[in-house]
Structure formats: structure tokens, C-alpha cells
Image 1 (cartoon, rainbow, N blue to C red):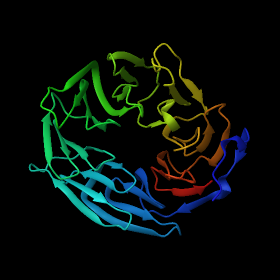
Image 2 (cartoon, rainbow, N blue to C red):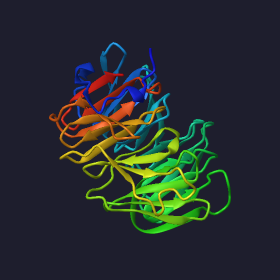
Image 3 (cartoon, rainbow, N blue to C red):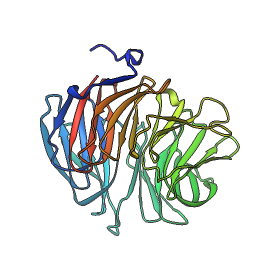
Image 4 (tube, rainbow, N blue to C red):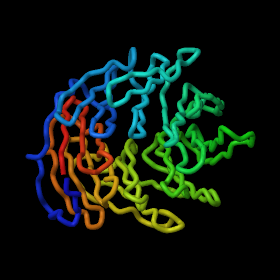
Length: 338
């Protein structure tokens, strides 16, 4: 298949006729690709696997609400209010990785490229190595988000008033990055130089890890619920406004003292963002159901989906960058081939 060239994008175009509608039978809360299989995670009990032919297989993965999901491209790991942590592969096989001893909700999960998995229940963070050994650490407050650093076995645990950086295999005390407020989703930059959180309030916060300098990333009208690093980690695209907000990370100071780029404005709030794995383009979904593919260099847009059918709740590219899939809060879903 020919690799997509973003230079071919006209400033205004439509690819709506290339979208293949899918009947996944549920609203999607997250979306992941395992090879050429798209995995739609629902809010309750089930996942839907869609193969290359568009055939949908529904798999029960929890005995109740699904609270979190993460993927490393080989499996999708989910946590539920049944106290279970499960892994789903592209063949539809479900494996229970852990069950909370107190049957607490598993509400955050993160995966390490070398097989480790982190999850949380209440104030406790857990890390299971690729060999199956489990370490735990109790935080000062309920865990809001988890992320593995791209290098080494280090876990960022977001919680109230900051982030704890924990090395599960070291006896040293964890490092604490302080900033007042409730910190939720957390992410390391791909070059391991910055850490960014999305907060409960309409703002983000960041730290430069070399010296823990603060990066204030505010001005959002709504909460940031979706973040995605562009190819090579040059920018961090976010939801939360009526344009896609992209913070620059090309210099040693990251976004400190810089204004973000604002692309693809609409009369609707951006609800989901997903950057292409190889090219400087991204997909953006909106609260009115619109989906655009946007070139980061100049903001050129291609319409993928017209408005209607509920807010876009999930977006994902396959690893090759040849397909983008979406799901909405009303259960609509589709895949577009580039």
C-alpha cells in the first residue's frame, strides 16, 4: 500500500466517501489497533474487535463497567469496577492479569514496551514486571493517572497536588513534583525530557525533568480529556477548546514562554485527538460528531466525517498510519483508509 503523503493534502477536501461504517453495537470509550484489528472498548463489559474485512466480534472482558484501557500494540489491558485487570489480544483471548484483593475499582492502567503493566486501585499504585513480580506503592491521595517513562522502569503517578515519580525496582524514595490541584491524565514526552498532566480544572501543567521547572499550560475553556504526541514528539495535541491546541516541544524549554498553535477551529469543542504515527498530520474529533484530518504545518484540513451522531469519543491510527478509526458517544463507528 502506498504510504500517505501529507503534502498531497488540499486545503479543503472531503474523504467522507472513504469511511466504512461499522456496527460495533456500543458507544466507544477508547479505541486501539492490534495489527490490523481495531479494538473498540465500551463503557460496560464488552469490547468489539473489527478485522480487516469489517467483521465485528463482541467479547465480554469485565463483569461491569470498564474504567480504563491501554495498549502496546500487542494487547489491550483494561481495568474494571469488578476489581479485575484483564488483557485482550487480537484473537479475542481474554487473560485476567490481576484481581484486587479488596475488589476495589481498577481505574488507571499503563503499559511499558517491555511487558510491564501498571495499574491503580484507590490510593495504591501497582507495577507488575514482565516476569510477573508485583510491587506496590501507596500515594498520599487517590491515583488520577499513570504513565511509564519511555526509558527505564519509572512510573509517573498523578494525584492531588502533583505527581510522584516512582522507580519500582529501586529502594530510593520516589521524587515528588508539586503543583496545587487535582492531576489526572499524565504523559512523558517521547524524548523523556518533559512530563505533562491534564488537570481536573480546565488546564494542563508540565515540568522539565532536568530541573523540575514548571510549565503553565492554561487558557482552556473546558477540561482536557484527550492528548496525543505528534510524530517525533515535536508537539502535544490536546482537546478541550473549539480548536486543536498544540503545544511546542522542539526546544530545550518546551512550551515555556511560547504560545501554542491553534488549528482546525469549529463551532464545536474538540473531544478527541490522535496524531499520525509517522507524518505531521493528526485526526481531530469534535463534540458535534465532526472528524477532520489536519496537517500540522499549515492547518490544511480534510473532512472525514460530517457532524451528527454524538460526540467523537475515541480516535486511533493503526501503526502503519494507513487507517484511522473512530467511535462516538452514541455508538456510531467507522474506519477510513488513507
